Length: 291
Ligand code: BT5
Image (tube, rainbow, N blue to C red; front, side, top):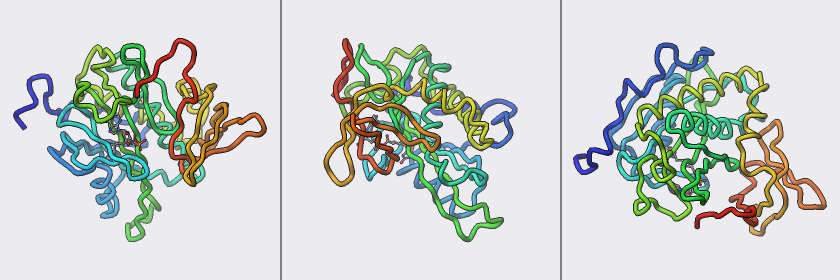
């Protein structure tokens, strides 16, 4: 991989780890592995989970060749221009109905890590997008894909594992981005595009939010998410899997991570699996959107 130029150094496997005491709350002990190339870090980590790997594995790929989004969509990134990584977790103590919070808390951790390491402010788009401003227009800088992996043969039986995948565009140029609705931290005016520092910062934020979620401390998580979520308070158009759309105001996210949309006659409760996508129905005054 010698065609990436001096602006795209490789990830430093050591510098990518939070120093000293990973996941200070103690639930996660990260072990980072960097692959030069992988079709999909989510698929790779899911395989390791089925083979009995313990929680805390972090796999980052310098180049992901068949990255996956939700609903069989794809995630496209040039070599070393993005962070593409997946985490393996076993949140045994968290009841299944609270699992939909995982992508939300991951988005929040990405937002917090990016703000801290790159100085780029972001907004979350429910359920799994992180948006940044490029030249005054809002665009997707990161996406999250959480998959549940059953592993019946694994001893001791910890139940299902969660694979948490993050794709974050870092130095990707406009010409390299796969869709006009995408942006990168560099295009959004990042103060730093050091991917190892970004990974460390996101892992630190994730460990904190994950501990909150596992501990059911709940306290900070939902209010923090609500503050960071740009979907709330907006008029949205929700594309439904069976076809058709629901138009209304996104009013809240409930205890189970579902989006509440008020269409004027009633409030609809939507899980991530109930929607194809959620788009602003019309921009706010003075606001532009890409694509
Ligand atoms: C997502 O899906 O946003 C989840 C993306 C998760 C990617 C990570 S990378 C590490 C791990 N391993 C994997 O295989 N996946 C995870 P979704 O909301 O379905 O968005 C997919 C859509 O985003 C596509 O249909 C494109 O329109 C757009 N897209 C594709 N590549 C993009 C990029 N690099 N930046 C912004 N948008 C992109």
